Length: 407
Image 1 (tube, one colour):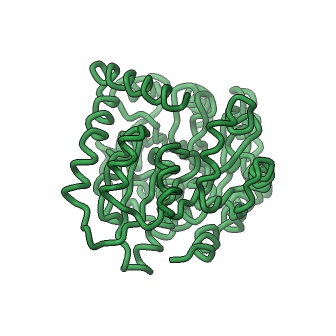
Image 2 (spheres, rainbow, N blue to C red):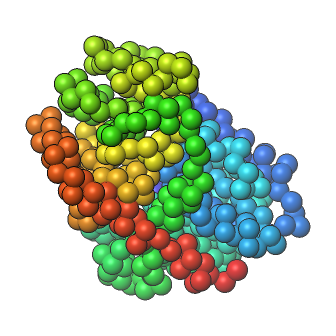
């Protein structure tokens, strides 16, 4: 059944590539991957293979990649992606020797790919369970590790109709899972080579904080401000709530870094900000930025450093498919506000339990929370402290994983 689904998916991707630019890039990248590997693979080298579906999974795997690269130069690193949103952003990442798409999981593709690379070990990040690749790796005696994985009872592996596909889990040499529930669920399938190590994202956000850069224009914008609100990865439903609040509470400096940076979306944000002095980052200078009330970030790559300047943060996506990275904000010791779609995000649940994160589901809830931050200084300080401590107390997953792997 899995093979039939894969070939149906393959056909669907081929058709969709005729109409969708993103799918076209993925389709072309997958078809070129084997040719690229044959040209670039050093036949005398020993490759450690990391696979990440997209950018978020790559960030989870990145601490491991960089530790192995720095401490074990005898290996070369192969990094593969499934999604263009990961590959296109990180195709020039200098922490890997070869970066390419992973061809779709047909038996033929898996055989050709693994014959070209011959990895000595493989790491699959979080939700990556490629049936044919993993079975061939197991047959060849190549260790395969699942990193920062997390399991829930409603996943296919734990349903009666998913038992056949669930056999893929037994191909892994070891699981490094995020929580005890995942370990328990795997034990019910007879899988015991499992370690609860937490999430490598905590290690990664601490790295990001330590490598953060000064942003002179943001410093100029926030200079002298007592209250700075930073909204990261926001979507229109998020912006309609928090920007309504700041249309009347004008004593806050506001920084908005939307998830989608397009002229159409920027126009929607500007429409919500009528009556406020707004400056786009691309148009800001040290002369004009300090006079603005709102700094609109119309470029990428700055958000993780921008949170440093915030008093309160908001992480978007909670009114859509799901929230974005709350840890990048929390690591800076500031409270994090999120929308209601966060139940499947363990880090968000943990942050709220630690009283460093706060869920809102409408304007009234957002307004009430912000008013409390404004009027209760001890509440604001403790919330920020709780957020930072939540992150710092959970670092070390990378160290635990490397300590359990024979390199």
